[in-house]
Image (cartoon, rainbow, N blue to C red):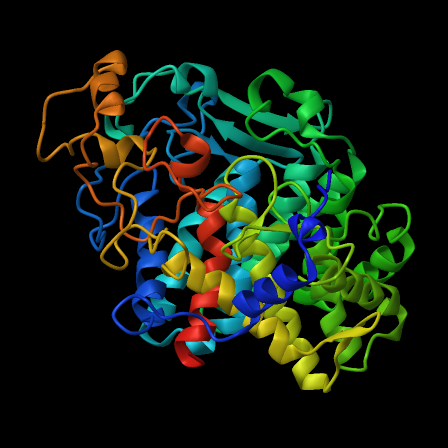
Length: 496
C-alpha cells in the first residue's frame, strides 16, 4: 500500500531545496566523477558470485566453487544451475525469472551501450535460461523452488558445504501457479529476443518453451502461494495476485513473436487482468508499471493505437512517482533516494529508475512529453531522475558511501551473504557446518570475500545505513536489484 510521501509534509522552501537535490546535476564525490563503465562491469560480475551448480572454466569470481550438484535428484531430474537469489542458498524461481526478464530487457534496450561487457551480460542471461529450460522441460509442470527455506535460513553455511534439505517444489495442473509460470514465460520470451541473432536455434528453443509455459499458466490459473504456501511464504509470497504476470507474459510473447493472438489476448484481458491497477509498482511481485511502459513503446511508434490506454497508464505511473507532485505515490529520503516501505528498498530504486529511463527513450523517439497537471515530465527530466538514483547508489548521498560492493573507496563491508562472509573453500578447505558459521555471521569483521558488484538493500528513509550482517533488509544484495541496474549503467556509461 502506498505511503503518504515525505514531501507532503515539507514547507515550500524545503520542497524547492529537495527538488534541486533531485534534479540538478549530481554531486560528484568519488574521484571527481563516476566511472559508469566500471560500475557496469562490476554489476554484471556480481551474477557470477550468485551462480549455483558446476562452475564453468571461465568463472571469474574465484572465491566461489561448485555447489548444489545434486539438485533435482529427489525427483529424478537434473535441476542444477541457476542463481541463488540473495544471501542464502535457495533457488527461488519467481525472483529468478524476473531477474532474467530484466537482464534481457537491459540488453534489448541498452546492449548497444555495453561495449565489451555485452558478452558477459549475455552469459548472465544464459546461465539463467539454461536453468529455466530445465525446470520447464516437463509439459504442464514448472519446478519453482530448490531447497527448503526454513532449514536453509536456520544455518549460516557456504553453498559449497550445503547439507540442508534440497526439497523440490513444483506447480502443475492440480497445483497452479500462474504468477511464477507467467513470469517464467516472460523471461524465456525476452531472452529469445536477446539470442535471436546470436544463436537462432537457442532463441527458437526459448520462444517455443515460452509459448508452452504461458499456455500452461493461462489454462491453469491460480497463485503459487496458494499451492505452495508453506514453502514460498513469507519469502516470495505472491501478494499482488497472478493476473499481472499473465499480462506480462503475453506482452513479452507479443514483442517476441508479433503474433496476433497475443495482441488480442492483451486487448481482451486488459480490464479483466487489471492492467490499470497499482500502476506505480514494479518488481518481482508486481509487473503493472512495466507492462504499461513496455506496451507504450508501440503506441509511441504510431503502430498500436489499440494499446492507447496502456500509454495513458504509463503516463499516470510517471506522474504518480514524480517528485514535487502533491499526490506522489513514493517517498523520497532527505538525500533524494526513492523509498518504499518494506525490505530491500534498492529493488524499488533500480526497477523504477529503469522504467524512467526506458520510457524516456521511447518518448524521445516520438518527440513526446508526459503532462502531469501543471507540470510536464520531459524525456530529459526522466533521464535526470534515473541518473540521480544511480548516482546515489554509487556514492552521491549523505553518507558518501557507495552501495555497490567494490565500487569507490567506501562501500558495505559486512553484507548479509553467506558465501561472502565465510572463508572460501580455497582458504578453508574443511567443511563449515550449519551452526559453525554463526561466529562469522556475528563477527564485527569485514567479509573475507569481497562480493564485487553486489548492491545491498540500502539505507532507510533517513539515509542511515547499518553496515551489519544481521540487518538483512539493509545489507543483503539480490539479483533483482542488479538486473535493472545493468541497463541503467550501460546507458550512463555511454551518456554520462
